[in-house]
Image (cartoon, rainbow over all chains, first blue to last red; front, side, top):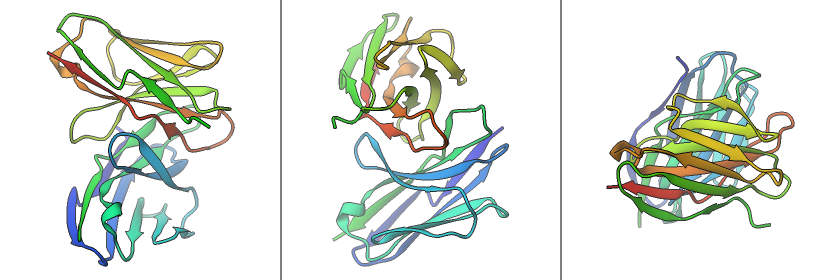
Amino acid sequence: EDKVVQSPLSLVVHEGDTVTLNCSYEVTNFRSLLWYKQEKKAPTFLFMLTSSGIEKKSGRLSSILDKKELFSILNITATQTGDSAIYLCVVLGAPGTYKYIFGTGTRLKVLA
Amino acid sequence: DAGVTQSPTHLIKTRGQQVTLRCSPKSGHDTVSWYQQALGQGPQFIFQYYEEEERQRGNFPDRFSGHQFPNYSSELNVNALLLGDSALYLCASSFNRGITEAFFGQGTRLTVV
């Protein structure tokens, strides 16, 4: 059965810290991995990764995918209180399957 | 651009009742998916609609049904509500070309008492 596992489940840091969120997956015929940020209700899109070793970057956030080892990491540098949210890792599987497979998420809390 | 809009935002229903949730996709999107997110869990795929037909379904009973209209908007219907149906229901829209990210609505918080 397809599976996405995120770690840690929760994390508390102070402003200015750097955090690394992990996502491992077991999915038949992987097509892409996505990261979303969920603050209150609506998950908002951060990154889509389809190729190994190519880092995607947006401001203080970056992510990379390793298709050989079946994992991805999301890095956040110089954290701010506004980064407090649940970060969801999502995998899209084989062509002909359309469902997103979500991990449980990592709940990040950044203290001032 | 209004993005993905869902209604209502909150709903309280009694066990055994039926409920209908609504979703309008982001402008230009033609595909709508529905997800159920229980507290402390990641969203679980219910089904996806494209060209007014259910294209794929997750592991949900037949009590969960849906519909897509010609304007691409969609409804999720749940019959014979159970306490365990209490959750946040998220609608996601996307464009059916290649691999593109989905955009999510704010969700409907359903509480079954």
